[in-house]
Length: 69
Image (cartoon, rainbow, N blue to C red; front, side, top):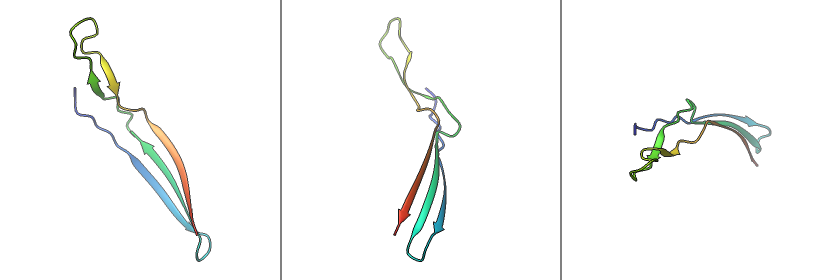
């Protein structure tokens, strides 16, 4: 199998609402290039020999916020 290449990105913005209250908004992008690298294959000899059994997760987009007071 080739080397697994995966790029995860996070973009964030912090906004001060009052002097003590802050809001942080985040956007996370996992597996940004949507690489489908094979992580494991069947090693047993037979009809399913070298068939992929585990691959990288698909591209995922996640939004999150954090309120600090």
